[in-house]
Length: 393
Image (tube, rainbow, N blue to C red; front, side, top):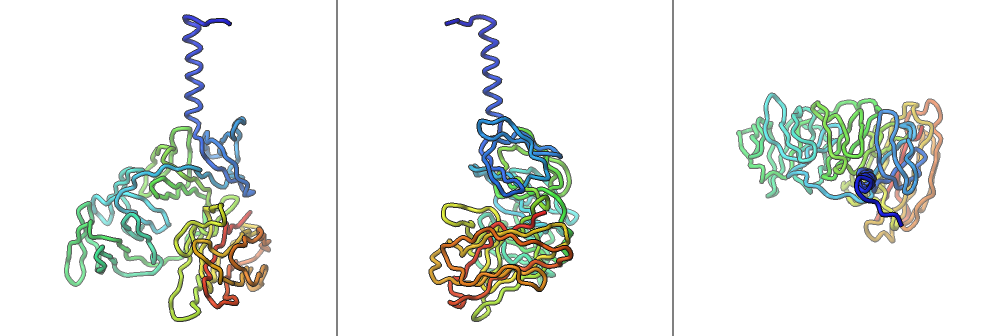
């Protein structure tokens, strides 16, 4: 056996160290989904404007063109501190952190994961205490609504906000400490939805969500444009998901419905549809499989989505929600293209995951509708999941 000594030993150790560092720098633990909905475990090498470079276990690196890239999700994500509140933007983005000031109709915001930024008050929908669910954001309102931790509410116009509290001008001007704020729904007018554009949704470990036009990354960092302007380098270790929006595939849960109809069987209680979770606010799951994308609804429900000719087909699966016992659930499922039923299934019950339903979208089609109707048990336990509903080019 040859014994390496002196300079040769040092050179060999340097080579070993370099190889070891290369293994460490490869960001392992990602799940890649391509436009054909196939998934595989990979390590992330780089992201450029043209492609995503990944390496499957034990295999050389490959480049996935953007025309084939759907999303990357980290299979095991470490949690990170996101601040005391979650700021919800009008485009659906969410940024964990805390307010630090208010000037010229702009909120100064400090995010542990993204850094400091200034955001126009007109671009904000809500400020929600960490752990609370920001429901009811689609309702137009002419004033700001503040819910307090003791159950009280207050209305008015926010004239100041910072780390200590907020000032609300209404019938009288009042100051509310931040520790007493449960959530704030900002005054908002409903405007027509902007046309879908190709973009990227970046999800961070603290619950923040950023929608950006461009993403680049290497083994250590990801570079994105942040809300309010400016480009930031974020640690790749803080990222748990990167999704291409309106690329080869467009998830319906990332698009804005043209119309939402929810009709209770008795009374006036409705169950608002929830994106990427069950109608009860839990993860979308069937058996041991958890799905990141989907829509949770309750019968009766109808969601209408506008079509612009950019996509050639719609595909989905569906099942009764498994977040509780559903032995009495029974619904009828219909998929419409304009005024024609293109898929119908009666007596959908718990414990059955549908096959993949693929529906061609003819040229000139204007509206895709997803309907969940009452079945044999009226509306009893009729919590339903559209699983990975997507438009496909």
